[in-house]
Length: 109
Image (cartoon, rainbow, N blue to C red; front, side, top):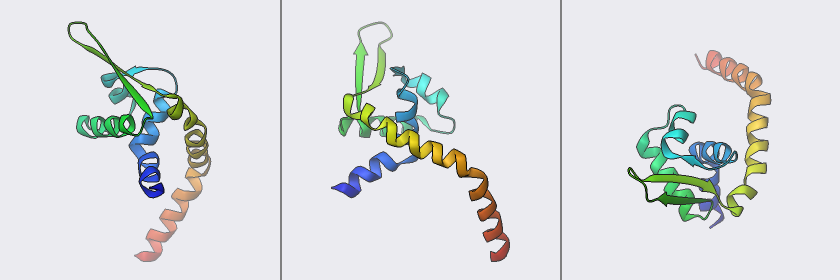
């Protein structure tokens, strides 16, 4: 069970969704614009998975056209701190990692 939870919360799209929803509710297209490179299908699957796991709620407003907002649940908000720490670590060490990758690739030929 732990591995399936880690697979969900460690997925790059899930991490980005949690980070962006940390600022409050967002609409689907708003999230899609904020998260560069995510396809509509992948964002849909990610949001469904996060909703299934109780990290995100989906609220449909009866307007024309229908408006759908996504928001972190209390459980999802509790994930913001570790996700933020992971993002901060990645940002702080991106130059070192890039240098290591370049050195490895050069040595590998």
